[in-house]
Length: 106
Image (tube, rainbow, N blue to C red; front, side, top):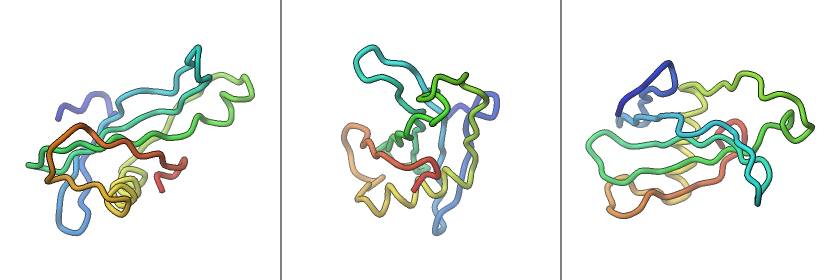
């Protein structure tokens, strides 16, 4: 997985390595309003991807500018654990599985 400009990384959870990458920043949708950022997760050597959807930052809902978004390995680690506990099986095949998480990745 290609990581550009600090928008991704690798975390280790229970002896397995997972790559994460920022897929999209928060964006305004004409039908849904503000949508939060999304990151993709993939375990090394496994086929199935998970996508984490974060809530839109409160500042956007209040009409304030975007500001700088912060996603790091700690948030990605919590996201991996949340996806695994919600039933994500990285070894299975199929479409990416989408999980809604809170701002901290839980």
